[in-house]
Image (cartoon, rainbow, N blue to C red; front, side, top):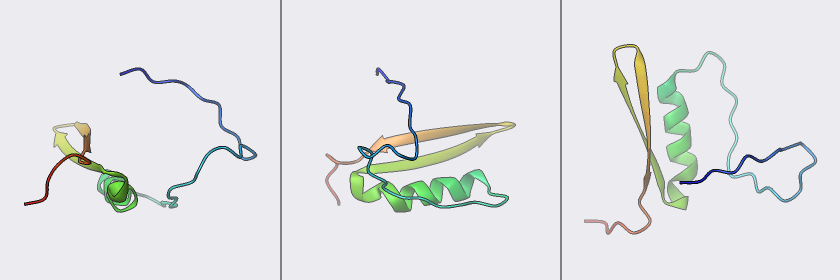
Amino acid sequence: MGWRVMKVSAAHEKLTLLAQKRFKGFTPHQVVTFLNQSLKSQGLIFGLRQFDEEWELTVYDVRNVEEP
């Protein structure tokens, strides 16, 4: 997967804001919950697992998954 680096400024008019939330003393779980609530309609689901001192963040594309 190739990622492109993009400079973003407050005056950049071509970007569409999908969601925004301010956190004060947040946990990783709060961030994942926010991402899921904000981007599920775009076909993205986020998962989070902890392995001792490390965290694993997973992004799933569910646009082509049929609901049971």
